[in-house]
Amino acid sequence: MRQGMLHVRRTSSETLVAKRLRTQVAIVGAGPAGLLLGQLLHREGIDAIVLERRTPEYVLGRIRAGVLEQGTVRVLEHAGVAGRLHREGSIHRGIEIGIDGRRRRIDFEALVGGSVVVYGQTEVTRDLMDARAACGARSIYEVEDVRLHDIAGRTPRVSYRQHGEACEIECDFIAGCDGYHGVSRRSIPPEALQVYERIYPFGWLGVLADVPPAWEELIYASSPRGFALASMRSATRVRCYVQCSLEDRVEQWSDERFWDEFKRRIGEDVAARMSVGPSIEKSIAPLRSFVAEPMRYGKLFLAGDAAHIVPPTGAKGLNLAASDVWYLYEALREFYVEGSDRGLDGYSARALRRVWSAVRFSWWMTTQLHRFSDEAFNERIRAAELEYLFGSRAAQCALAENYIGLPL
Ligand code: FAS
Ligand code: PHB
Image (cartoon, rainbow, N blue to C red):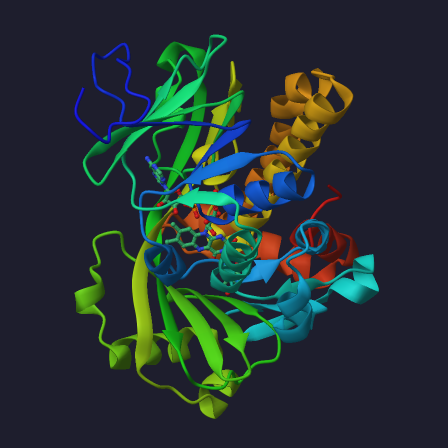
């Protein structure tokens, strides 16, 4: 045996394992789902190791969500990472829906007595990373070739390579928090999964820019040229989107072209008063609805984008990751503290009830606010839906209670 090799043993694949670790829960993925689960478990004294293929800087560089439901805020408070969120996040008590230049405010407070918090996913992830580093819990970044073993058996393990060494983690459970393109869902035999999917025939081109927002609340605008969303990250930074073709490439959209198109869609009054500036991030995201059922296979539990994807129109992706993680945390706490399997056995059904309510709402917001085609009948139905929304308190209540988030 070569000097310096620790715990050398052969795995089933006849690979020398240079390092073998042991934990209660192995978490694959250090996005918001993985880090939030790790933080909740740590506060309960349950040991977890987080594995991430990228660097922390890369993970923080991905610009994504911006709206937190009240339920998500409560989960972050329970995790002890909501301090900066309360200091720097801004409470929003409504949004505006625009149709061809007309706008209607959806007053969350008056309609359903609720609100949301605008605070970027990047900041949530940063707060979670800082908390994990502060408590010294184990996170391993820049891993390669992560594989899941014996997930249906009694000795689940996660193997990976780092700096050319083969490593392995023995655990009780594996949390697959590695997103849509991760290895976890793909480790489940296809015959054990039922997948539901809808691909939308357009994408979102998003721009981050350091200019003050000329709007106080988010504006979701449907125009004859397509959809636009005016959001923000702070009093000095905007996050704006326009619906674009799936054939578009970021290189085809100069900042000038983006701002010109955004102004044509967002409404003349906003266009007239807004300032523009150079993009500090610009990216195109395809839109899809995707759900994989069940969210558990043996000792493997999926959470967040690993199990489902929603179009960002309903601001649900990050919030669904938080509710999955809350349910999984409660189930694991029940197992380790009370010795009961009940929560683990009920996790998938409980999470999927909330997933499908968010998938429905995100699909509804997307189909109502985006121009799909020149199919005259669909466009008339869409116009009628939006007119009904503008004129009906009941319709506005339905939108409001879904947007602020159904109860956890
Ligand atoms: P994530 O994808 O965030 O994190 C998964 C992590 O696992 C990543 O860090 C990845 O590097 C890692 N990983 C993957 N494979 C691995 C492997 N084999 N081994 C180890 N690690 C691995 N939601 C909204 O609510 N509003 C939005 O505006 C919005 N915009 C979005 C824009 C884009 C381009 C995308 C892709 C998503 C957007 N979302 C939005 C949804 C997004 O916010 C997700 O819901 C959220 O990131 C989910 O968090 P996680 O489940 O942790 O998945
Ligand atoms: C964002 O600020 O990035 C954002 C906000 C609301 C959405 C989608 C994205 O529905």
